[in-house]
Image (cartoon, rainbow, N blue to C red; front, side, top):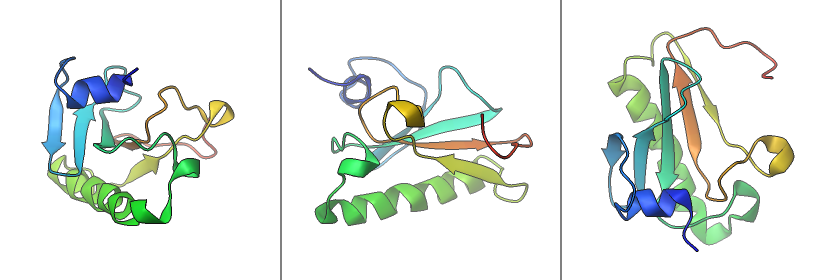
Length: 113
């Protein structure tokens, strides 16, 4: 079965796009935890960061560089932002498809909840 994100990538489910290129798609979160909350998702299915392999290195780096570019585009690079990758049940993973959360435009406490 396809993951929710694969269905979005394949345009089977609509989403508000923030970015798309050959390696990834970025969408606005439907339940945002900050005024800016975007998910950067690789088009290649990598279930979670703990299952990434050496061959995924370029894709993983691309996700982080895309997040930084989006932070500039969305106006949060100067004030600051947080990048989050959840891994596994205790890590808060809800979709078994690696994705990077970009959160910004509000103060973010530490440690996270």
